[in-house]
Length: 123
Image (cartoon, rainbow, N blue to C red; front, top):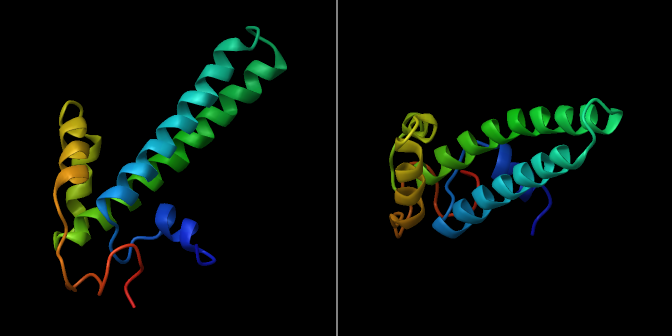
């Protein structure tokens, strides 16, 4: 993977991302959140470890929200839609359906206004 590709995937808003990259990136974020939450539940209540895991959870939650928006915007770009529709990923009950649709809906085969190819920032 080229240098900076992971940073672009989770924090960049330009370009396009494929269904597989969107799904795997989303699953990575979920697994990280579940792991930190699990570790928090194992820590004794009121301990320093409990406070540390709680802090890590909230920090990861903020980063995950930003990364989810970035992934959603690039996934929408892959089939020529504006990134503002990524807001649907945060509407309760609609978010699961929106995630599934973004995982299954095929992107544009060729270049579009958001980039020449998938899984790369717009050049």
